[in-house]
Length: 272
Image (cartoon, rainbow, N blue to C red; front, side):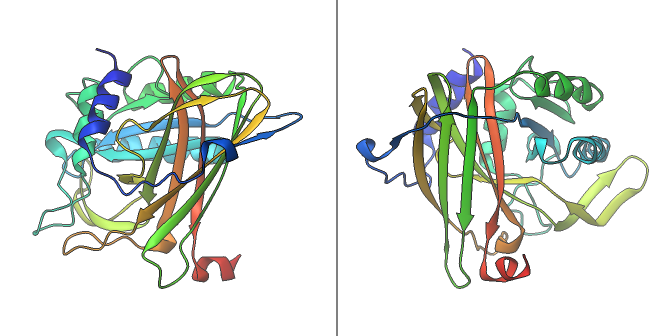
C-alpha cells in the first residue's frame, strides 16, 4: 500500500475541525492565465530527544536563507525520540498524527525528511539536491491563501484558491504549524538545551490526515474554505501570532504545489 492510500485510510479515523462550506457550484470561476512559481515542501521528521535533529533544523534554515519563501518546511515530531504534546512534565511537540505520517514513510531513524513527496525519506544531507531539483520542475498550479484569527476569536478562518493550467486530480492537505516554541531539545554537541526555539512545528491537520480529494479543472479558479479551532489545553496552547497555515496539493507523483501564509491577527496585522 502506498502512502496516499495509508493517509486516506487514516483520514477516516481522525476527527478534525475542518469545514469546507463553499457550495460545489460556487467553487469554479474561469481564469485567463496562470504564472505559477514552484514552492517545495520539506516534511522534516524530528524529535526533541533526537540529538542529531538540530543538524536537520540547521539544514532547513540554510535552505530557507538560500531560496526564501520557495522552501516550506514542516517539522513533524514523531517516533521513539518524540515527546507527546500531552506530556505533563515537559513541553512536548509530538501529535498523534506524527506517527501516522512517519510510519507511512517507513521511517525508523531520525532525523529524516521527505522533499515534495518524491523519492521517499532521506537524510538531511540530501535535501539540498532534492530541493534544487524540485524547484527546477515546472508546476501548472498556483495556490493563493489567507488565514485570519481576529483577537478574541477561537477559530482560524482559512480561504484557499487554486488556479491551474491543466486538470489535476489529487488531494488538498491543510496543516497548521507554529514557530517560536521554546522547549527542550537534546543536542549531540550541547547536550540538553532547555530553551531551544522550535520552528515550523506541525500542530494539526485541518482537513484530515490525508486531506480532501480534489478534481481541479484547467483554467478555473476553485475555492475552498476551512475553519480551525485554536488549541488551548493544560499542556498545549497555540500562540495565534506565531501560527502559519501550510496547504499543498499532492497525488501519486508527489506534491504538485505548496503554499504557506501567516495567520493574521489584530496584533500582527497592525505591525505590517
